[in-house]
Image (tube, rainbow, N blue to C red):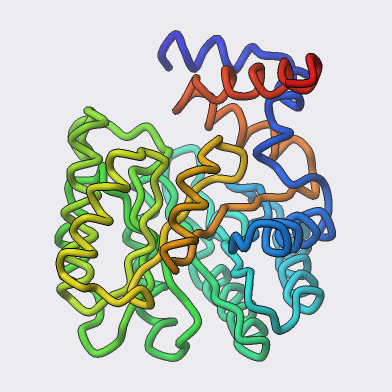
Length: 310
């Protein structure tokens, strides 16, 4: 653990709650749905709603999470503004102290049940990608489910060395929705790039490769220069706007860029997480702070602006 992560882990949870406010919809299903509705009605921003929590081993809590997702889908119903994201390690997969992974079949059935429910409402499900020990099982589950369902996608991380081959290994007979991002997990140098600029270059390359392979890249970045670079390529090659979209985290101050993307006629989707247990929101925000300490500066600036009326 580096010094930055050590300091962030020592940050008191009440203070993390302050930092979390712009980035977490709140507690309970209704907070996620209401936030997504507000983003759509006021700004025409799409959302992907996510229940926070991962590395869960207790069967009772896993089954509760499945029910939360099923209830979320019922309450969302048929609409045009929201998809749903989920993590395998909150739905049955876990690793023990030796790093051995358990619960793959249990997790697969849970995710399949959620996707089946989502299909009835025409809601898209994204299977999120976690750190690299889970990459193979996540992609295996996705490919199997994609053979049966149209409404499922997954995530590939530009930092991993393996990602180009993972794109080449995607089904060639079906369009796959793939969120392409740098990735939030700190990965070792033997499996991943360590330089952020290199990761951004790869994200751009992988967007192009996904398009060439007939897939639908969900371009997830806050880097405005990278977004401009992607747009320049997309426009130069006359890529139809229904072939891709842009994604960001809720709370990161990119309103002008988001508005520009929407005015172009593109989908601009924000990640809208909510929590049932606040400890998971705290863990999420600590990980985001470790990856991007500027989050703290954004929050302080926002708080200062509200206090002074700016």
